Length: 154
Image (cartoon, one colour):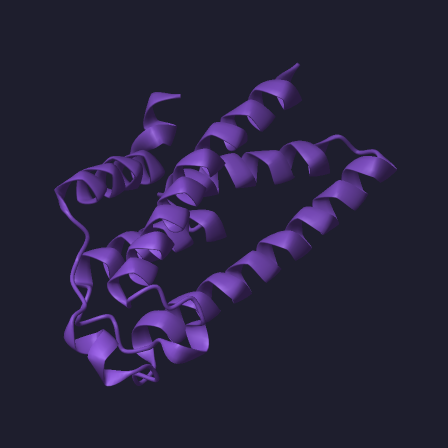
């Protein structure tokens, strides 16, 4: 029964930071005049600082960085799989570690290409970029708080 509770805990945590990442991706796409190719983005850290911050927090939570909600659920799942002392448990543990490593790779890649590298898009798209409106900013803030502190309550 412990595995069910841990899995449900991870599901709810995962919902927070994945929703945060999807909504922040939408904010970036909207800010760049509906550009969806990350190869045509870059340099948005200074242009969209709020969106950069929430995307970074969501990515770090997804990677399972300590003191964020993703760490506690992902680490507990891996611990339960390893602690089962069965062949299926060890297999699940190693697949979970591989998945966590790949997740860290693509999350870092996303942050690097969208926010840190030099701008690669059209100049007009960068001139008119703006942070999302009040409604989206409020939802992004709520999801960010959930991605950081949800583990404290459950």
